[in-house]
Every structure is written in C-alpha cells, then in structure tokens.
Image (tube, rainbow, N blue to C red):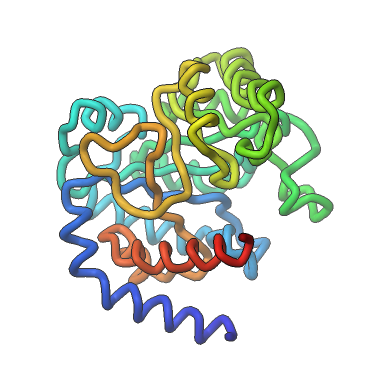
Amino acid sequence: MNAAVRRRLRRAAARATTFAAERAARAGLRILTYHRVNDRHPADRLSVHPREFAAQMERLAATCRVVPLGAALAALRDGRAPGPGTVCLTFDDGYRDNHACALPVLERLALPATFFIATAYTGTDQTIDRYRGCCAHDRMMGWDEVRELVARGHEVGGHGRRHLELAGLGEAEARDEIHGCRDDLASGAGVRPRVFCYPRGSEDARVRRAVAAAGFEAACTVEPGANAPGVDLFGLRRTEVSSADDLADFALKIRGGFDGWHRLVQGARARSHA
C-alpha cells in the first residue's frame, strides 16, 4: 500500500469515527506529541515542517486553551475535568530544532510546552539511533538551550538517559535510566522534573512503579486518546502529530478523530512483533 493510499484510508477512518470520539474526549485532556520541527527531512514521519507547525500552533492558539502538562495534573489527580478544549503540548527526545524552530513559534503565540529530554545526549555530538550518522542538524540541544526553555517558562521532563526501552532492562539499568535522567535534569537544567515520558512507549507495571519511586508525579505513554478525570497519571495518553498531517488532519486530531485509527495501527504493529 503506497503512502497516498494510506493517507486517504486513515483520513476516511478518522472522519468516520470523529463524532463518537468527540463525545468521549470532551471531558478529557488532550496531550499532543511532537518530535522534530525542521525542513531537512521531508520523508521523515517525525519531522514536521516549520510552516505546517506554525499553522498548527496558530489554530491551537485560536481554538484551545493550552496549559503546561504539570499544571494539568492537579485536576486529573483530583478527578476534575480540565475544561473543554484544554490541550498540552509535548516534544520528545530533546532535538536542537525544538529550540531553533519550535520555540520561536511557541513564544510568538505564548504557548507553553513540555520537553522530554534524553539527557545522555544533551550537549554532545551524539543523537538517538533513528538519526545517527546523518548530519549535524540532527544533534540534540545543549544544556544552555535546555536552561533557556526553563527560563522562558516551559517545562522539561525525563525521557531516560539513553532513550532505551525500559521494559526490557534489568532493575539496575532501568534505575540508572530513570533516576539518572532525573538527576541530570536537576543538575543541568536546575529543576527537579515532575513528569516523565517512557522512551518508545516501552513500559509495564514494574517500570511505572520505578518512575513513581524516582519522584515523578506522572508519565506519558504512546497510547492514543484523551485523558479523562481520574486517569492513572503514570499512563497518560497522547496524540502524535506527524509530517503527514495537514491542517484539517490536525483539527481532527485535537477533536479525537484519529484515536480509533491510531489504536488500529498500534494493534497491528503489536501483532506483527508478537
């Protein structure tokens, strides 16, 4: 199945389920996930073009209430709805283009965001496996840039140290990834992180307990959907924004229109790896 056919299929599936998804998501918190914002990788699903990103953020600023993820936790913990149209923005991994390309747009529109940092790569010439060996543009932020995010009112969270799949690690190595990431951010960014994001969505009950034991208050998964009041704070759902999304797709994603499609895709991937 080629890319154009896949795109039409997923849009048709999203539109078919939008009404039901909107009803289910109305009282929930929608957390959007980005990875990269750049024009260097047009074929990369995780790299959103800066022009598209700016249009998406302008739509978000005009139609939704955007709050830091940490600020939304109290309502969810207490079983209160965060309010209609409440959205959180998150960025995974800690790429330099988050600072160079995404931050100016967020600042212009006064939109807060949470950046999950894989701390072993911060301030080095290395990057995660997906982009390793490509180009200098794929490097991660330095600590000065991470501290600037904090100084400008944005939130930084843990994403492990080396972006490893935590569910497959032994206890000692998992502890180093989780506690080490927390300590790296405390020393490098000057803040104790409140929220965590499981690298590649790899987690289980043991990993959730370890993240809680490290002092994190909540953690994000890659499971799709909105977060209803009373949700398990260590199993927060998110909605990924990809390079394939036009502005109409983005609007559907905010309303929950792609939740059903994302579950189908994830289920198919899980079965193929079983």
